[in-house]
Image (cartoon, rainbow, N blue to C red; front, side, top):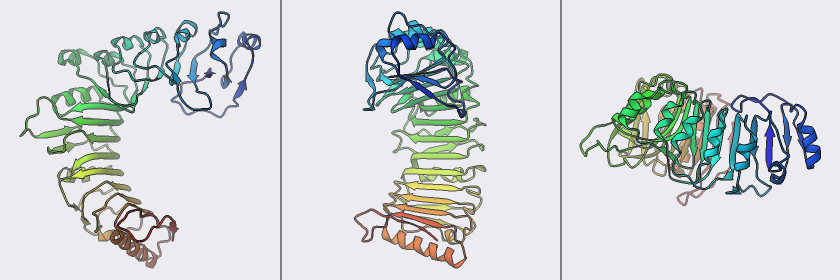
Length: 408
């Protein structure tokens, strides 16, 4: 099944339009296509119609594949006819067509493409992808593993969004090629490259000086030694607002973080508690998610830390005590604690934060649940009717199972 749309660029917020579906035979379809296609018209057609020699559609700018009702992607079907027929495509979404390990080189003939999305198990992207000079969005869906990006990706100066779902991008650009390539100043979002601590990371990230959203894995570099001091350096990314960082295979080694002051949303996965204090100094941080810790049983928030934090998520942590002075996290609105199976203490100041709206518990100890109830009662006594407790305490250590949400 195909959906054909003559429309503006997909990344823009769609306007309200009336969409018309046409299910028709060949003759009716060809007669309709002889007239101008209006924005918002979609056609539900069989592949046999589109492959017909009589089919021609010079005005088509956007082509999106959809599967049948079973929801499964089409399995490695031949789509070469697309590139012979639709010469003016700007948007091509093939995420419902399984391309296997083959990247169709014919895509490179669609030089007007601005949006490209594909699905497969390919292990690399050909260097000729740079022959798409107008490409702004490139999305890849895989089931697992690494997809190697070519060095020529640095020549695609109009690229704004580079994403992979289900795996990660790997690249080992030669230093000479990287130094001689253009900066990707238009890159706005980049999900999910594998970066290696050291000079390689700095060289790559300095090419993305205007990036706003980044999800990445960080691993040991070849230049690292057992006693090497590891620094995840990103302080020069002055426009970075959202960062999701997973420390990949670095549990045995300490790593420090140098993040830009512009950061508003941060997710850390597999981190060491000794590296957290500098994060508390980030002046604009509003959302913090901490997942999978090691190297500590206690976390203390200190004076001058997390002054603008609104949302805090603690998940899969081994800490026992979380403490802090009474004026810390004073703007906190939402607190989530999930799978914190050892946590028995939270800061006393949670009882007095007037902005606090929600506390959520999931797979935590009953002693922590009792402590949260005391916080609830304290807020009630102060007349805070906005606080709600979402509690789903599912663990063998608990004798009570709460699945309701209580609004005070």
